[in-house]
Amino acid sequence: MKQKTKAKRLSAYLLGICFLAISNLSCSKDENSYSSNLGNGDVSGIITDDMNSPLSGVTVTINDVDISDITDDSGSYSLKSVPIGKHILSFSKTDYQTVSCTLTPKQWNDGTANISTSLRYAAAKITGRILDAQNGKKPLEGASVSIGGDPVLTNSDGIFTISQLPLDNYTITITYSDYTPQTREIKVDDFMDGVVLLSDILLGGDEILPGLTLSDLKECTPWMYNEYRGGRNADNYPQFDWSVDYMCTLDMIGNWEEQNEGTTMRVDENKSEGPDLDNLNTFIYGRKHITEDNKIMTVFARTHQGPAIWNVMVVDLSDSKPQAKKLGENISFQDGNYKNFVFDLSDYVGKDIAIAIGTYYSGEWVQLVLRRISFAPSAVNGLAWLPGTPINEELEELHLTQEMVRGTMPNERKSFTGITTYDGRKDRDEYVWAYRDWNKTGHVAAFWGLTSITKDCDVFTNEGYTIKTRGGNGIVSTSKAESYLYSKFAINDSNKKLTLRARNFGDNATFFKLIAITDDMNVKYLQPNSESNVAELTEGPDGTIKFRHNNGDNSHPENYGKFVFDLSQYKNKNVTLVLGVYKGEENGDENKVTIYDINLN
Image (tube, rainbow, N blue to C red; front, top):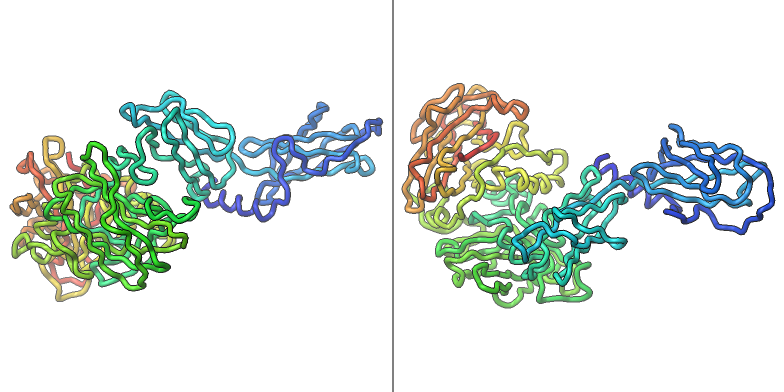
């Protein structure tokens, strides 16, 4: 049973079931009965599920006599030769809540009685693992996990499972000894195939930001790059576009939503009994290494309702006792037009910090819309490209500055996929969940930075993530990229070779470059080595790689072209790799690099 089906079951239940009794609650009014022998009769009825559909396989039992039956495909049952009088009937089926109904003497009519009811689906479960922050993150045995009834305890692996649940909203409370209790909110839409699998929960650490301990902040998503964008509508195309809507892949807490205008921090009114202007209510957060090259953060934002009371909180992760500190006074902001807000992080140069941007609860429901979060040596002017020094004249049109290269944090992953497992093409509102699923799968778009210069990308193609050129003629250039991906890696013996598996489409060749840039701005155009296996592969002008390979799909990864690059020359160095696509020949087509995966080994 899929998530949405179950959610519909819950909705039908709330609208259509007038009465449901659980355990020994009565399905009808309990009346005084008389005990004289009135002979035997028959009891029958129809059992339905919580969508009012007939439910077969339900065991119907009269508790005080040895009589039972099982419902057929029409949901019907029949109990014969039942002593006329008062009885308790039980209705049970695996994965459904057991219901008990009272049959009273007044319900008998000419030796027959009808008892019909509904059973509610209740096979959902919530499971997760609790780790001990005070004991090296070892599994925490004996922690108490409750949703309001009897608690369950974690086992020796720190794992708990709460089973036999109806699909519903839940608040989970975790307690252990004198550790600070934690809660988790579960929404009905969080259940996938009837299961919610929570991320590991760290118990025993002091809370620094609401719901987050020091260990949480040290392991949260790194903000490796100098720019993150939100919103699904084109704005100053192609620098911003819905298809590069990647701010929503970052970590967030509270009531947030992805809107056309941007990634929106609302307020969660259930978190507080009243206004609270000291503790962030809803916020986006991540960790970042601050240098002279990225010490100025610019937040490009607007409001829908307001005024929004918001601010930026910073935690110095290297402090002996890290604390969350506000960057100045709270901001009260109400404006439907975007505005740049500049924050100086100079005090944290050379340090790893956690950054949180979010709203406070002032007693009113508000929306702070984040269009861009950017980092540079100076403030950003409107929607301009990030300020900085060009790497060299040849690469100036990349808008990738020396400061961006030096300020980018090394990627902690070595393996990336271009395949989106969550199909976001069905519904535009589903895009956000497809994007967020990238974090789980190691998607290239979540872990590499993307810059669209003259062309956007294709996110959800079955064959892989695609960067591409414009169609049409008169735009040929092997020096100006149409768009590119980039990431920095600390090269050692475990990742000194990059393997790209990719393909293109159509009769025309695609031109791309793999550019290697060190932190001292040494630039090289890398060519694939003899381990590569591509249908048609040659070196093009200006360091480009010209190829044609029209084979490979999600079911046949072995058919993709394989491009292998030797990175051993960068051992013990940081190197930024830029994968750009170029319009290398006059043709009317979009020319594509469709990525199945990228691996460094």
